[in-house]
Length: 404
Image (tube, rainbow, N blue to C red; front, side):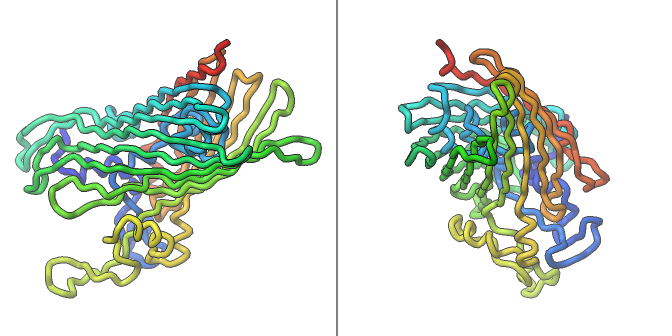
């Protein structure tokens, strides 16, 4: 498969939040418009960090910040590890990605944990994202090389209970993104992008009574990928990584010894600057239209960008609300052996337009659990075509704490 040389083109395969955009400053149908109703998608470097890696959350509409803890909690909320029941466990996941566009992109994810004592736990993760085989060509179409672009992260987390009901966690990860293998792009030498990032998370759970039925209520939050910007060239231009705020709640109950069910709800917001609205005229005759007429300058530090992200949308408060994605999911277990899951994810059309239903299933036997999830497109953007449609996830979980 031949694909033209260029970092921007390659990165565009990963800007999933931008996949439905017709262009900044246009309406959904492509007509020119300003204000909160224009398309204004937020894009970042290494967006593969935001891909749901496991089948359980993938089958529940991408919820996970407050669901019951498991081996994949480091991605969603590492603070949950302090409440995990088993002594040790790990998970292996595989996700064929964007199969509607390209046949050889995939995500592999390995995560696990171990309890140090009743109050403390540590976790680890390895995430590998492969773009398959890329054939680089020059402007005349002559082949100049082949490469397999890839990205990966290696991370760890520490979680501790501060009370019987509440825990905090901090995690860190190294991010490596090599998209071109050192090929020239636009006359500039490209380099791998690298970053160090951290997560800060909290988790609260407590049994409550509703009527005569006991429920388990959970609340969770996670600020993930707080780290330095990434550059793919030797210039000073650097891009934000997907710093993200996730808030959520979940409630579940055991109806009897065989049937239990839970419902979870998450909201997400990227803590990076929103692209401003620029004047279409070249005011200073330098060949660039860099006059901001609405919004704020996105060329700020990481910390300033995080705080600025709550009030920099050029469309005002209305647009800020549209930058919040939400998802809802449910999970049913029978005899703690068979699971059925379903969910829905929503993103506003002006911010990417991802809308999809998900469903999944799981089977558990002794220390092994096998999960599967499937995504169904619910978006009408671009004639209803969604590159994420029919996405499948496969996860195998081992909980060694159940060995007798």
